[in-house]
Image 1 (cartoon, one colour):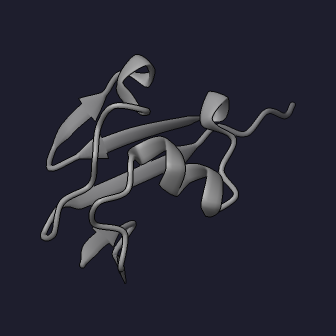
Image 2 (tube, helix red, strand yellow):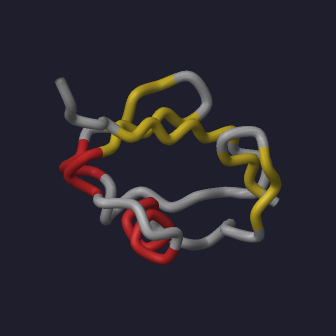
Length: 64
């Protein structure tokens, strides 16, 4: 299991990009941290989630 934003998901083996798209996130409007390290957007497609990973996904919201 992978803990994402405090919840357990069966996402191990998926790329970060695949998980984000399946979960409905806009990959251009989020920041991803895996095990305390910020992941560059250029690595979303080639970085795979592993059992035990702790992930935080933060969405950017515009407004005034």
